[in-house]
Length: 198
Image (cartoon, rainbow, N blue to C red; front, side, top):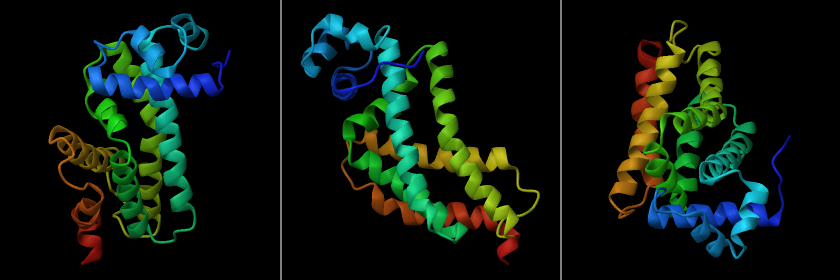
C-alpha cells in the first residue's frame, strides 16, 4: 500500500528536515516535528510509522526531487563532458539552496543504524543510476575507455562530490559551494578520459 500523501505530509517532511538539522536525529522527538509542522502528534502517525520512517521518507522525497531536477537539466544536453559538469553543479546548487537538507543528508543520515543505512542505499540507487547513464554514454561515444570500471568510476564521482559537500557542511557553509563544480569536474573528467583524450 502506498504512503498517504497531501499537504500535511509535505508539511511534516519539511518540518522534519528543519528539526533534525537543528537538533540532530536522536534529539528530534516526533512531538518537536509535529509542533514545527503545526499538526497534532497523532497526525504524524497517519502518515508515518515512526521517526525512522520520517527520516527515510524525507530522503526519498528530497532525493527523488533532486534526481528529477538533474534529469530535466540533462535531457537536452548532447555532450557527455557537459552532462558530468551539470550533474556536479546541480548537486552543489540544490544543497547550497537548502542548508538544513545538506546537514541532514551529509551528517544525520550517516549516524544512523545499519537497517536505516540499507534503506538510504536503496534510495540512492536512482541517483547512482543517473551517474551510470553519463558514464555509459561516455563509453559508447569513445570519450571514456571501453574497459572503464563502471562501479569504481561511479564511486569516485559520487565520493568526490559527496566529500566536497560534507566538508562545506562541516565548515558551516562559510564559502560558496557551486563555484567549486568546475574544478571538481575538470579533475574527474580528465581522470576518467585518461589516455582516450591524448
